Image 1 (spheres, rainbow, N blue to C red):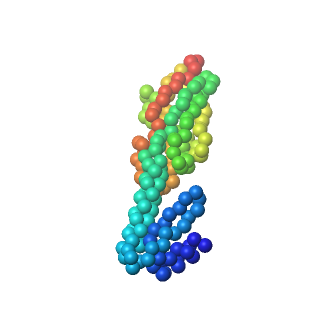
Image 2 (image 1 turned 30 degrees about the horizontal axis):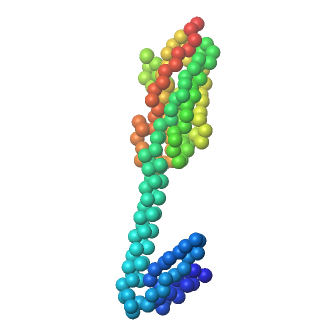
Image 3 (image 1 turned 30 degrees about the vertical axis):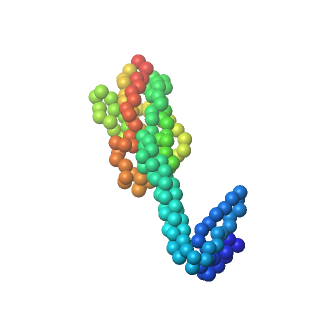
Length: 171
C-alpha cells in the first residue's frame, strides 16, 4: 500500500517528503510546480541518510569482526598426574568462532613446537598433554585459526595467545 502511494506520488510529482508518527507513515504531498527542488532534495536527503546508517552499521560489524580480540587466552596449566599437564583456554571474544585451535609447547631446552590441533567452536577448550617429563616446566601457547579470509587479514602473532607455563609433578 505505502509503496503504491509512493510510486503514484513520484509519478505524478506530488511526493516531496515523508513524515510519520506513532507507527503510522504518511506522505506529504506538495505540487512540484510550487517547489521544484523539494522532491530531489528529499531524495538526496534519504540517500545520504541511508548511506550514513548503513556505513555506521558496517563499521560496527567491521570493528567487531576485524579489531576484536583474536587471541585465545590460556586460563591455566595444571598438573594432571606425574607425567601429564592439563591446559585450559578461553576462546577469543569475536563474532566468528575459530575453526580450529593449534597448541604449541616449549621448554627451557626446546623451542615452541606444534603438539596438537583441536576443533574450534563457540566454547572454551582443553587439552591433556601426556608426552611430558616429570618435574619439568613447560610453556604453552594456543593459536586460533579462522576462515581463510579472516586468517589472510590477520598475522599469526595476532592470533596466538600469550605463553603460560606449568610444571609437572616431581618423580
